[in-house]
Length: 197
Image 1 (cartoon, rainbow, N blue to C red):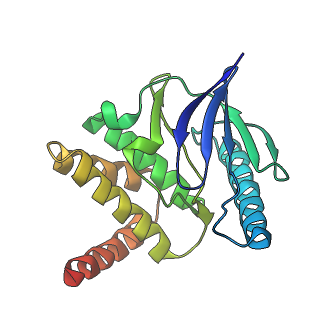
Image 2: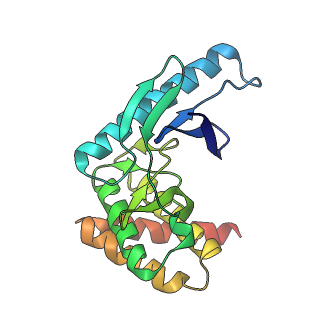
Image 3: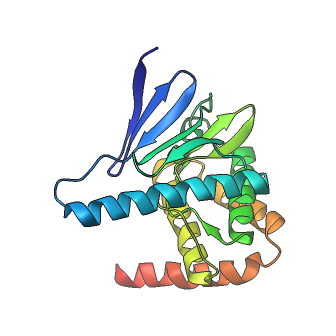
């Protein structure tokens, strides 16, 4: 069975092969080959480790099937369903907030939280694309993660933005006992953003 390209980003090519998803990081000609190989290897390994951790924590995300940091390749389970950007409503927004709260409670920062990186599969929101994700205990990193989600919601879903943001925050507090300190820092991050303008 042939493979179908289902996504292409700055770092990787995503293909669907026989019911699984394969993410490959092709070499970048503009980088020194030694640095390029090291970076791609590190990112492949880090993403594979994070997917394993998410499964352990029970956070809905693609299941890691196989990874090979020599060929810079990760194989994951295929999530069948629409992207949340096409079906978002306040109920799903609450679920998104809970998921982000669970990530942050376990010191995982997604770093690319948009509704395009979420899939509704079996009536559950699943997070995808952990290529930029990292582990951090810093309030600033978690606040910036939330800030990026806030910006994504406003630009992509402006007609239901206020209600959805309210539900995201509500879900976040529900899942993360110390959410208030991150939300306080979020206010600082947002103020900084407004001052730059």
